[in-house]
View 1: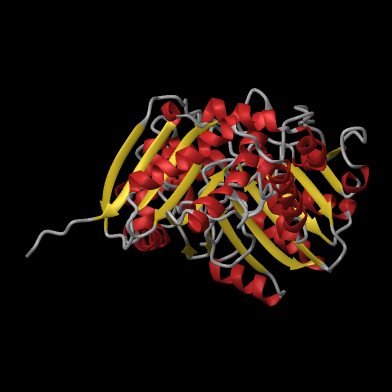
View 2 (view 1 turned 90 degrees about the vertical axis):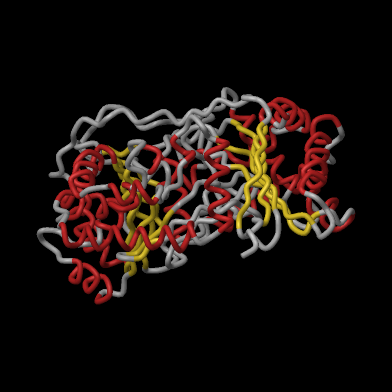
Length: 504
């Protein structure tokens, strides 16, 4: 099962979007005002998430209307859950999704911009994340200090996060303060003040984060190098925070143009979840956002990464305490797979390999054969563009990386021809559903699912069909996915060993 380790200052959510078997591997950098995190870490254990599928998708109509509500067909969606979800599109193209949750008098509001690290010019990596920092530096109407003071005064919290595919900002408030959250976000959508003094200082903050979280972290450096190997032709081969030299080269003019280009209503989704009346909420949204002007958007770079480039293996020396092996197969996701069953099958395969103590890698290689000290697998079915089926392992003392790799490959090969027990498949499907239920228990989890999926072009309402979809996945589907994609000529391997320091 795939897992992502997002890093954000407060634990706003654990970046949960599809569920145990359908997990998330995107690298995300989260920050609050002047604090951000940038390290890109290899997934090990699975963080449950909630997913969406393009099966029977009902995308928003192209025609933009004045807050016209769009409702799903009751034949395709669970009518009870669909009844609490309301979707609108303003005349300026702003997509608004409101989800009622009346269990507590709290509301979360999020603005998701469909731009991230994968959209950046090749020589200006890290620009999306740097702009995220600058969004907390004040507008023509509200200073940075007043922004934070207002949020604290009315019992709120706020943060932001950047990924390859999107940049998002949120506020959590008592439900009667929704208007304040909307006013603040609408203001900085168009009135951000980008000052030289703020920019110079904040760029240094980001560079220091880069040093602390990546440059001084051998595991993060290893995964950064590994990602370039596995994604040689995709912008997702670079880290979200960007290379140090490129961060340093970004100028205020670059950032200003980035803001003016992408931070527009027709490139955004506003998500509101909590104790709200949808009619009142959309009226407040129109009050603050209806006057924002849309504009023509650039074509986004391709994030397709062809696989089957032949077997690739490198060894990298780093100041690590123990050696490790990183392995990745290039695979499609729900946004690129010709048949959505492929993505779901890969996700379930990851769960069969690494879905708890009874999963194959943990049971056979860690506890029974005692070849590995630790192992984890991950797969992100929900990303814009192609993805990776990832495995990372640390061998036990006396076991070489080559032996560890061969043991893992043997377990993967067994998935292609040997029976997959019904109990394994049932466990993987159950993990997915229970994780989905758990992730949606909070307003933050619901908002995260809605915003992230819509930002990559998927429809969050498809999770309503997840039980039916999972029931349709068979053992033969898993065999087929493993046989096609988990093969040597589609495999990238990085061996990380302790560096040999010359004697002084």
